[in-house]
Length: 425
Image 1: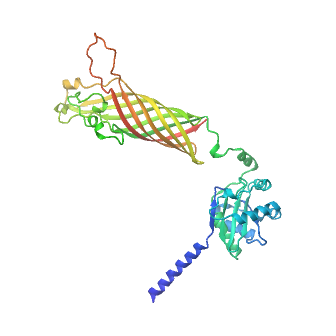
Image 2 (image 1 turned 120 degrees about the horizontal axis):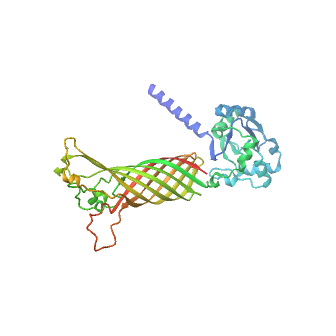
Image 3 (image 1 turned 60 degrees about the vertical axis):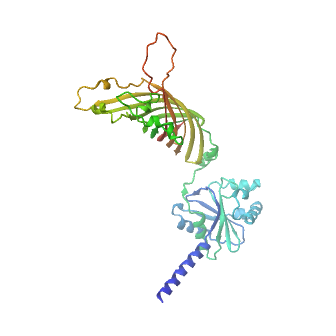
């Protein structure tokens, strides 16, 4: 018998759960409307009898939402006696249904629109008895269409009915009510999606990333001669065209940068980038037995021209997508040392490879900045950078033979992630 009773109890719990879900309120639409703390709730009833008690409904609000403070509730008798409001209320009751957007329920009569705009910071709750359900719509001063709408199951118990309405439509964060001066200022502010673009938006940031010779989605054999090469006898390699034939191409990359855009479209950015590269020595070459380490630090300064487009999916969150084109100068500082027990270097060490004083190149890429609360940003960018040295000069019969130019054409792909601070003028 015990297993049978347990099964019956479980079935009862499931049935009660399904019944409670079936009897819950249904929200047809709900836009971003402001629930004021200590709100004035005006109950607009289209039927003869009021299904809820205003004072009890205020207690339901306080039970459902602890942040609502001390609301005040009353019937909106002046609208219940107004012919235009009655006609709009009856039309609204007949036309509000699931799947219908709030825009189709907009009050189009100028007098009714004026009534809604005169609400100020009060909240109008429209209710209409539909027999087994109670129809609900929320209005405020910001629009001539309802901000939220739906139904709750009808209940003869007015307190339970008020609790159901409060939990379905008023369970949201509250906001301090505005003063008359604050409301007047808010009315003059432009819409968030059509607000004036700042004349100048600036940022400063620091980023970390990675660079390598191989560009993603391109064949390996394009780069194998660079990435697999090794330096013998301190200066000999298969090819001297790319710096990556001498030093390691894949390395962490660190950047400091400052930039800005004008009118949200065109801008510029200056930057400094640093990376460290090991020389790719051939371990089978016995001459390197004297060597402790051999690295080159890469320092780059440059300027980017940027073209951007701003998106604002949320009021507090901006996305600035951009493409950039720029140039840079690259400088290499050598860090080399012999082992402690080697007092005198070899001739190969003294005649080792030397890089040019500076290399110049271009950058091309895309990226995006994600900015929270107008100031705090995170960015990601990727692109291709190059560096090289001119190898063609005016021919001269008196010119002496010169050593081969190192790094005439060096290209790499990079990706970086940055933290930024933004400000606007």
